[in-house]
Image 1 (cartoon, rainbow, N blue to C red):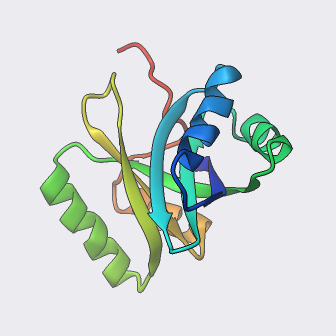
Image 2: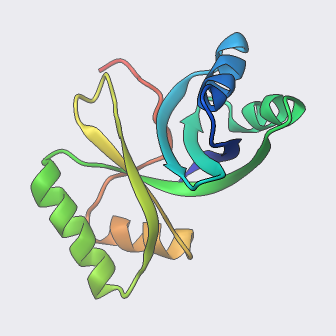
Length: 142
């Protein structure tokens, strides 16, 4: 499992940039992100290299933030793997709350980030079915 940062941002021009600029100023790396909006605010979900420190930095800037665990699954053959992944969830009667992807520079294939109500059970089921769940999205030399 990896840690994800969820940030509530106002739905106005420049608000996402305030988040990325604050992280950039602290030399923090962003490995994956997803943004969902409503008329008044948005939720920016991010996987960063230092989630607890990022939470502190953003909280000091006035953002409401939360850190939670998510599952990251390496996907080598995107279409086949995605269908198989969804099949495991269906068989296990697991609802997925949300999903988004990251593309690793070193692995040359995407990683699917996902969240369910029972992260540990979901990850154990995926591993039992042969999926490669990763504990970091950091680029590592081959």
